[in-house]
Length: 244
Image (cartoon, rainbow, N blue to C red):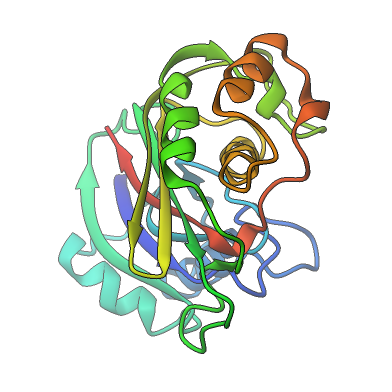
């Protein structure tokens, strides 16, 4: 039985997250339906991460098993014919029997896009959070630096998280500007429920002057979720890459 790894790109707008849900449109549901139709057998996929409703991906990784002898190079075109245009299989390869998309991942990189101007964008509107507020990027960068390392991120976890431990290892936390666009990049071994969006919300609060850069580190150490407001909206977030 072949173990097939797929790299998937998707526009999460209109989907109720990645994970399969009864009677609701999800990325997993669409992928499994397309693969099942192609193979004429039930297919269950495993993903590197379960993105929330409205979150996008450029490099989601999934794997599944099949007894059909289909060359890996043919999988993308064959599956894409059966998928909605918002979901695309970019690459496929046959991997070892022990490969597991979630358990073997060493890090996930997310990118949050902020359109920092008064007017919205006809092209970026589905993929960027828009704000006309003046943002202090130097302060945001100062607040992001202490997030790097192994810490208890309980203050950056939304209610309902199933994680037994709230300790995570962040390997990158950067803030950059490209014209009207501000990009926040966060990479970690794994993420708590809505952790990336809550971290972005904290950095935005610093950028607006609502929090001092040092406050973010104090909040992290205190574990007090109440000091940070609601998570940043989901449509600005994108799973960019998964490392193995």
